[in-house]
Length: 405
Image (cartoon, rainbow, N blue to C red; front, side, top):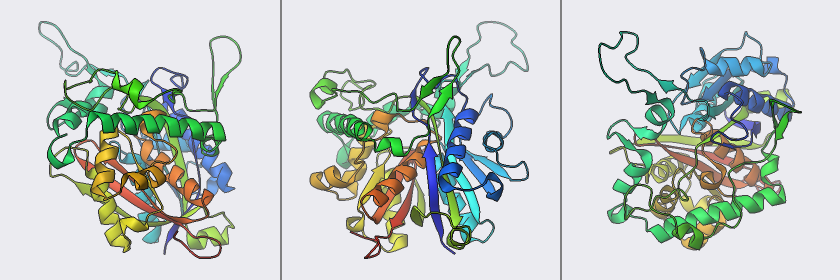
């Protein structure tokens, strides 16, 4: 029993302490879920299960996925699950939805991710037992649980620079060029209305005056070039490729997809945006990030019986530009193939990276792009904290010749 993506929606991606910072992760998740259900033409009561990724759950209350589902109008009789696989969370939610449907457990699942990095609290560990003497240090939940490698105690950017050696090494010039392309492609996609097809506006109450309606991604910058990025100082290592311009910014946002069995989609007369193919998880051999997307793509392609050359579109999450460059290279993609097929409307370097949501955003972007081009096969892939990777294949059959180029 195969599953299909019926529809999806995402909020705009807001900057840290930016336009969406007044909305909680739960509120952002609810907006994305409600938008996805509306686009699917599906009543909330027709949902069997809700799965939402979220990394920074401290202070959000019990089971944020269930809160978001209820806020979106889904009945309290529908179970929900919050998952944390760091940056892989949103994509893993979609993979879990597909697995539940293939197992015959569910027919219609809402899957996605949500994150408010702006509202992540500081943590006073040890306070329950008290402090006998001396200074007390708080932990930043955002950094400690979202952005620092638990195995090396390094920020993810420093870890990326540390593993930027040998065959994996990415030059500063290549990283800057990839990052500049991300902004340029995302800006073009915004101006053409392509990204607007993904977005549901979010209303944010203001202290005075009417609500602010946020309907576009906040982080995309105009005029970004390889030359302008080359003037930025390295963020971690003096010789490293990671800068403030080639790393994904801290962000707020959510994305959700309606996933259904093909039988349920036909019976309920739901639209079908894409078919879900193989999905794969990989890990190790250490906690590095660069090759995890490529390794996951290779495994998913092997499971599906397709070659990387058969992929019409490839979405690689741009946690850092170096990850995109290294994984594209490891997949054997030439510069021309990267230009034509990888992150064709930009990526997280430009849009931002709300860590629990980005995987679902990639799946939505990929599905809409494959449909827009008239069909094809594509993959969405990410690296994740701790040295893991995940990939998921999508197919959109062409009207007259089936899936493929």
